[in-house]
Image (cartoon, rainbow, N blue to C red; front, side):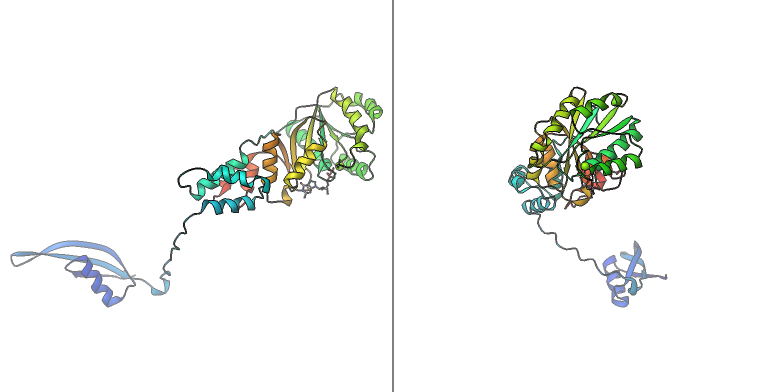
Length: 334
Ligand SMILES: Nc1nc2c(ncn2[C@@H]2O[C@H](COP(=O)(O)OP(=O)(O)O)[C@@H](O)[C@H]2O)c(=O)[nH]1
Ligand SMILES: [Mg+2]
């Protein structure tokens, strides 16, 4: 690179003249302002040092698009849709989030929306009772999640864990849990009525946790489940907690229906499955918030035991959609 110098009465004229001679592809490196004597008068001068730039490498000027004025209502609508906030709650969300007087910018609105979804959602990351009963609709992922939880409790908390299946009569169900028990070396006990349960109870004494698998229930087969209810009465003599297993991709209204199917039990917490099948967390989060049932565990795939996590904001927040904020930055360790 070659440096050239040029001198003129002032900086502006020096620049103007070198530009006239060399074009605009030049960069001024230094500028020196000084005075020279011209007879009795002193004259101002300016000397610049400059170099010519390779015009081929000159970057295209960046045209900064004029930023459109921010419209909170339409951005909020976008966030509500992206996260599938149920229609029944849209108006409430709009009222809550757009009421503040004064300007709100995009980041503030996004933070407030995130708080709206998460505030009030409780998390609980373990089980406390001896008998942990998994209930929920058929096919939601009860058996798979129960095996994942058993492996986790054994590996991470060094608990002595056994499985108890009350789903012994349904074709296919028995083979499924037997093969899981064998593959992951988990002790398995079976009971189909009050009597058979009473006979296995003494064998269950030495375990910290017995994870109880049940058959799914739909609104049609409540009566079929009467015998299982009797079994639960026996279990409730010991310490017993119920976990409702729900699918993250279920509709908001259906989640409440699923809870209703088990309303004779005191559901204490939630396990949400199939987070890999949906990117929309609105229904799940609002359901957890409104029922005040803590989210305990999350499953995001079929792999046993890997696709299983204790529930927490650090898992859920980065999965929210439509944000211009980088949500992973809120939880740098994730
Ligand atoms: N994609 C996905 N599939 C799952 C998940 N959890 C369970 N499954 C699958 O859902 C199906 C039903 O699971 P299962 O545990 O038998 O459900 P159950 O009838 O409630 O006991 C099986 O094919 C599981 O592998 C999950 O988190 N994600
Ligand atoms: Mg099952």
